Length: 379
Image (cartoon, rainbow, N blue to C red):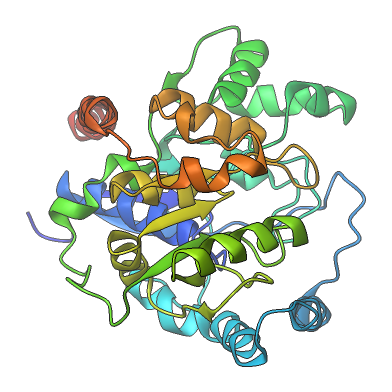
């Protein structure tokens, strides 16, 4: 089938967020849709006004503020500077791997628009890069059909939607979708409340796409060994947590490699492409993370890992608790800091988790194929 005749599919997601998880979920979904014979492009959105009063700076002031914040951490200065360089060069280095550049692609004409994965529906937050954007709910899009795939409301709850009086509007927009797929119970609860029907549940694309079996970009090795990965946004691990991690690493003669952000106990910040991140996970002695995709990367590489669930601040309780439950990996949740070392080096039996992932991968392909085939038949 020629490129001109291929079924045209757009992915509306968080592909321009400087984050490995956002990249890998976008790349994974694009790869699946390409396997299914589609001509795939990423679609952009205009950030909306934040419903929550935002104290975040924007533009160059935001970048300078973030850099100044990182420099205050106790990590070695060269590693902090490496992190700042990583952020500065992220778009130029990694956007081309997704097939996107600095030119924005708003509301293209498509056969099918897939909204998701990631926190595309997380509309009650103070992130000025997202805000309350109608386009993320399909509004104003020029596609013959619109569905979501493993979409998440993040830490937006039905109560928050009601408190900010946007529940009716969001419900109206979602009601126009041809199908709604979410990835967590909180998102499912919102959809059910707003539309009085149960959505489809699918796994995040980093799980749904077989990176280990299908992605040839992942290198076979990394230049270092004898390390723990600490995966999270800069400064998210407390001084107490970092002190504990430092003690464990020193006791076991391991280095602490930080990926995604810099922490106080960092020995080395790893700046590499997203595929090499997977290789670093594959060769790590263990992983400590407080993120959704950090936990997923640990699972698909069969690492010993610990997930820290946070309810305060930005919070990750809704999505991370749900993920561990779905994968039958609630045993990896850290309940007390005193238990970190024992849990971190307790071997993980992935037999049941792998079975779940294999089953859910088939459901992913079936779900997407259904709407691709329907669109082709209508043409």
